[in-house]
Length: 418
Image 1 (cartoon, rainbow, N blue to C red):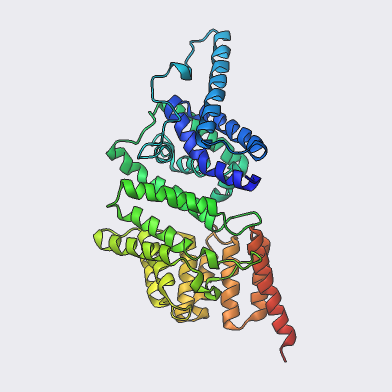
Image 2 (cartoon, helix red, strand yellow; image 1 turned 60 degrees about the horizontal axis):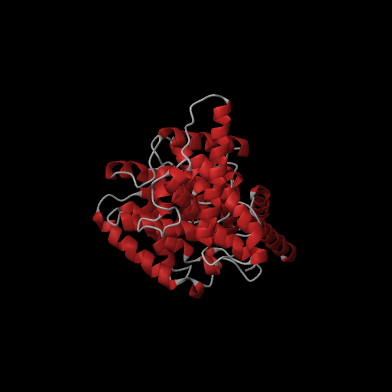
């Protein structure tokens, strides 16, 4: 198996292995260290010697051995310091073997709820879950939160320590606690999916492994809570958005905006499943932000052409969404919908108001949207400057190439104008 295929396999197995090791032995922070060492050993060994018949079991076995070493080392240190040994070695535990077949509830799902323990702040819950379950590096989690990497490192370390101190058993929480943690769980999955669908950095526009993992975990949560409208809404939103991924890049990896995509390449099966989910969820009761976003995504996906998109209805849905949450990205998307429904000047007026919001004023998406609306209005010189400003702020290489390309195209048009 090639190295990149091994890397993909390890990314899929990482949360399962960590969940199994924590379930069997506890000690979340030490288990994560042991799991990381097992993954590193596999990354070095498997491309040369081949993948074992049971890669998950192999990783769990190696992680368990390493965990034993780490705990013995810790016990020895504590004895030297003449303190009471707190650790229990793995071979003294009576719980089922860690490499037993996964249960119906799946170790990854249990790990997901554990990372959203109420002892943690919401920010710590999300950061820890992105790191332990989503497989994002600390640097990627830091970018998702727009904070320095050192700050995120300290936040994750404190979160692991609090989970350890809480003594929380490894298992799904009781139903009342499960409801309390659900909002954080869904937000975490939403962030993981977004990082996969529109990577914030690196050479690729997508990180399909992260999107697939977010969808897989959302399916697990939906299976656990099939009557929850927001769980169904989030899963529908992911499916309806991911359905467009095959048409979102050209053969050279360049970004293709939705209006120019070949809709025949969209995943019809995912669209049908997403539409069915949101159609069933909306009439059931209170409508939350994930259901509204899924309804917007469904309107895009069901339009036969870009020109046939029902922009007035999308604009109205964004206005309902704004009443639920003062989110600057939602305001930005609302400005686009207004521009498409009422003309670019109306959208630009909303952007002028949004420019006072420090949360998004410097974001490349703000500059890109303004440039697009300026291009629609015919002000090509200002649009070109806007695209170039957006490209300077974008951290994803494909996005940078796309924005520079838009600016260059406008420069070419100006040069050929009479």
